[in-house]
Image (tube, rainbow, N blue to C red; front, side, top):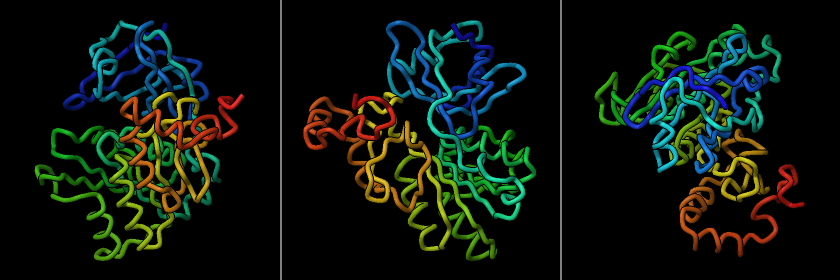
Length: 296
């Protein structure tokens, strides 16, 4: 069992939890995720790692209520425990494999949309700890939905917040802020990391392609099973079939077929849609990545 040491409400239907999981904390890195199961009847929920403390043996996760299992999960309190807490899974951010000295020569900007702030935070924190400053743009529907502001401000080189309704700091999308920084303030960026809803990542990529900025996206919104065997996170990247949970979740955003991914995401929500996708995709519906073992 994996005890919850802290449970906190961040915003409407969004909760943060510190979980005692020493073995996961010991080896996890920014960009990876865990699969959490609260009890025998609960779903297996893939959640990106928001933070970790190797000395305390804790991993921080952020959960949004989207269904029955996540509703029950968010009702848990400090002292309760998850039955399973498996990880780290996926591949870490490409930054952790780069030389920090070379990273210091790059101008990096993150664009976080809504819950995407949670997986952006550990990457920015890791860069900060290695002496690398990065600008961060956080977008939310309104002031109440802005999360982890103080934590992000402590590690970001510059933090820019924007809200859809203009109720906090400024009105507009993250793409509006990025365009303004580049075209009006003369900022230059070598790399952009965009994490959030797929439609938001799509439009960030359209803008950064126009601006000539290499862009990384995290395709965690399409994950369901977390092992590559269910077929939910199958997507096309540069004309090749990939699975977000085993080949990613991070990919070159300019190579991701977002329209296909969003269409699959909608179809996968219904039993008939899943059956049709399985029929259309045949052997590559799941396990076609060759990494997850689902093709054995």
